[in-house]
Amino acid sequence: MRILWKPFGFLRRLLQVECCHPNELISVSVLTRRTLVTRLSKAPSIFWLGQRQGFSTMPEIEASIRDTELFSPPSDVRGMTKLDRTAFKKTVSIPVLKVRKEVVNRLMRALKRVALQRPGVKRVIEDPEDGDSRLIMLDPYKMLTVDSFEKAEFAVLEELDVNPQLSEYNLELTYENFKSEEVLRAVLPEGQDVTSGFSRVGHIAHLNLRDHQLPFKHLIGQVMIDKNPGITSAVNKTSNIDNTYRNFQMEVLSGEENMLTKVRENNYTYEFDFSKVYWNPRLSTEHGRITELLNPGDVLFDVFAGVGPFSIPAARKNCTVFANDLNPESHKWLLHNCKLNKVNQKVKVFNMDGKDFLQGPVREELMLRLRLPTEEKPSIHIVMNLPAKAIEFLSVFKSLLDGQPCSNECLPTVHCYCFSKDANPAKDVCQQAGAMLGISLEASSSVHLVRNVAPNKEMLCITFQIPAATLYKNPALTGENYEEPSLKRQRTDDSFLEPQITSDS
Image (cartoon, rainbow, N blue to C red; front, side):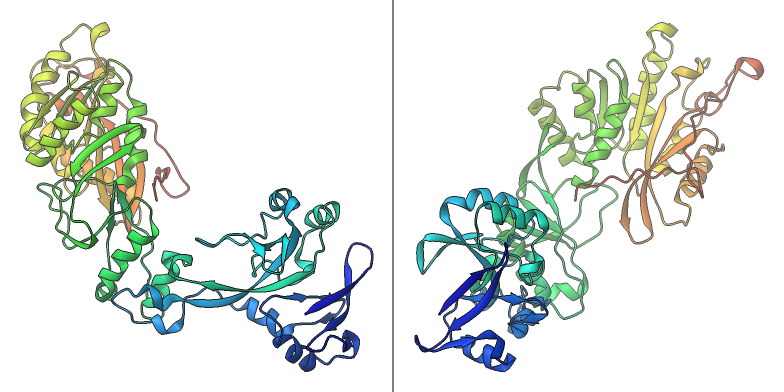
């Protein structure tokens, strides 16, 4: 097929099309819509699309380009439970722009907005009919006609003397060219939720599948491995987190069964067995936030330390750290990670129940450090990251210490994590924490919204200084000699919670 063009300013008008017979020239102006489509349908897989003002030469082709299912896998993969990659082959028609090969690089910078973006698809290919030309693949949703070019794009086309008329190209798509969400949406029952996100823990993709997704679990696992470089194992949680050791049962859906993994977070490296310890990559920003609150020389008590995401950054900041976890596996990997990050001389590691840790090592250190001269007293922070139960441990602070209270500015600061399903989560956690301490915290605490865990369930961190009247058995400072510590309240329109949502996904 050959097209004859007549220049008309920058845009060029389609004058004549030679179809079927070399000597039979047919004027577009006298072609009916049906005649034009019928003749062009007999042409090779690449042919020119032209447009005249108020007249679309290829309405049927434009309609197919607008089809929202253009880049969806074939419909017959619906219900597939065992992945068959060969079943995803599909041919689609997309617009292409023919250009001289020497201007491709300059032109691609100008056409970023409309260039095709598909996994594994080259945006520039050789013209099968002209070795000196290239075809630039364009996004069919953005390029419906020649007039879809923006003014700046037209200017570059004119500068490089590129004909703006579009061609249609039959592109064969395979499994490799579809995104994971597109594959799963085509396979799972229509209208059902699609799993396209997961928590990445080193080489492991951790999914939380819903009941309707379970018949497709092995296919979903394999798709996650296929579509995410570096992922070699996909697992699904099969039980809730055990509040004792903070781990959960999991099933390997696809890939290798090796759960020993290495992760990099905030420039620190952690190694552990994911099947035996707690690790949540969505808390990366929160780990960094607490570290920023610390100053060199501070003391940190990490009551539920896990494998060290609070303790190790604090130690690297030249803080003195006491880290504890009841889980023997977490204790083992905490020791390992302290050595791995070269802070083992700055972290004292314990393997105790949280209550015993507070009543033993924490109490002893507080008694020693709070008796130092005021100028030598460090700032003390206590992190309690066990959101399901940490609030219950706050009662341990009641009358924990003997002797005379220290000055208010030296009292320990607690960062306690918790969950809330209340309509006003900040107020809820304040009331919960206050009830455990036997005081009101509404005027002397701040609440930080960490993340949304589930619909109507928030994870929060309440921060407050332990009042001397609570911490000491017989506080002697009263009246004008004792002032209740307070923290600036963070407010929003409906509460004093100022959300600071943090997430790595």
